[in-house]
Image 1 (tube, helix red, strand yellow):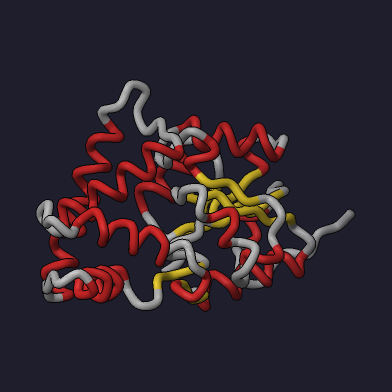
Image 2: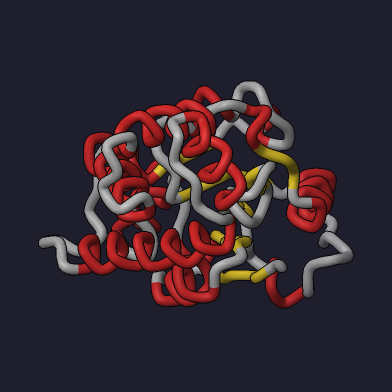
Length: 220
């Protein structure tokens, strides 16, 4: 069968590609409101007041701290449902400096980001997804999200129409671990050179996919 090449994808990039795998956050979906605004809104429910800019700074530091801890794991970037829950709980505690309300803020945010109303489509990524789908090339999703992604995907476009969705907590690995990509290959029953990852993060998506032998395309 001859597969039409999507006009927005370079011919040499999709030659030999059987499946285009999309990242989620920053690629197909983005938080609405933003992470810092969501944290601010949640914290104010419990009497904690911080500016969005301060929350943004603290969040970046807290997120990098957890990335470093995962990198130091043996093996590196291995994960699980409990680890993902713990990582986000610790991020929230660090942002709010172990406030007495931190656990309540975390639980509120955990529920918030599991709702379809807390996300909106990323136009560029969604357009590309439709172009790939219309071309006849298979699509899948693989993300450093936790188990909340699976029920969320049943209620939000464009995920609602994608059957093959893989979350790091279910794979047992986070990007940039090569095992993350190997696990996706195994589930899709594909070889690395048959797969192309579309993502927004130069390290976790693009460099990691290339190191795993996949092709890649960055958006954003």
